[in-house]
Image (tube, rainbow, N blue to C red):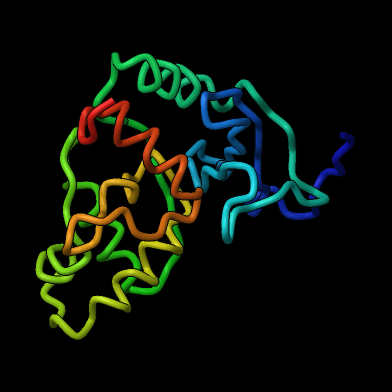
Amino acid sequence: MTTTTPADPATTTYWTRIDSPLGPLLLTADRTGALTSLSVPDQKGGRTVREGWVHDPGRFRAAEEQLRAYFTGDLEEFSLPLRTHGTAFQERVWAALDSVPYGATTTYGEIAARIGASRAAVRAVGGAIGANPLLLVRPCHRVIGADGSLTGYAGGLERKVRLLTLEGALAA
């Protein structure tokens, strides 16, 4: 794929694809190298490469190393610079996701409580989680229904099961 140089380097989006057990992952970053999205194939709301984006695999070496370690079970917590742009509510929800430890699950209601939202905000929390641009890295797959059901995952329920099984939250 050929890309053109954007007129404003300050707003350049860099991208690469990385093979994974979930299929090819599309990663994007800003000019500082902060990861701005991670998408899987056929993801609801996932990103696709756009004209003007710059393919630069070297910019993603740390992310690639950490993702490989995660998929082999050798990494439980990502340590990457991240930059997301959501509403204040979405950003609070996404920050709460970061506190859900590897191998554990939580519910939408518990996330609502963590951010000080009312019980009635559970649907809004679900919407914010569904809009998470950083699948895997920001562990929205660890959020389940109040009854223990594996509800919604933008990357698909099959992938959610694979991730929770990898982390030991579900029996193999």
